[in-house]
Image (spheres, rainbow, N blue to C red):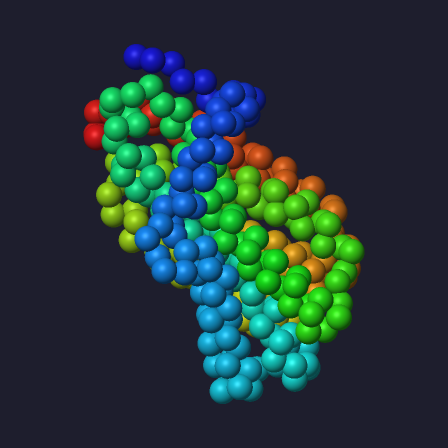
Length: 271
């Protein structure tokens, strides 16, 4: 039986060694997404704008929701877009995870392929849409409100540990999905639950105090709040919180990679 190294340094070495492959696969994922469509990459800008417009109308106009007492619909739309951007990385990447290995049997059975790069390729492809949504917020604030906070330079510092966490989740579900075919249904439910339990279209402060602690246990909550802080309010991120989050994300990735590599020898037997 072939031995697959399962340590975090081994994973990092694999990513560095296969960086060109990762880049090509991410490019292919993005190009296939818009291939054959009339608007092409324009959909990446149009869809989040239309979605934000619908949610903004429903919650701010129909339900009369207010964000921090502001009656400005643009404020609501910007807050919503940031929440959607952060959640979209998790939703797209984790949502595809159960079929990631199972849906690519040729990578497992016919060629020598570094399967461990598939989760990070999926996450980086999902990141593209999120960056487009964040750019819409930044440009919108500059054009409509005349505001451009210098603290946006901290967005990568916030997003990077979040990407590590999501990669860990994708890797874990990708490995389990080979053996558990109905995992897609569970993951689909998880994505839906996290959408409503993350402060995307409502502020965290509006949640009753007795439930706020539970909301903060959601690993997406901190990322949404911190991204809004540096993008909308011009505040500095909570570096201590980010440091602790980064440690937890690395630990999660180490555990997920260990499980992935231990289950990997059985992939070919199932596929």
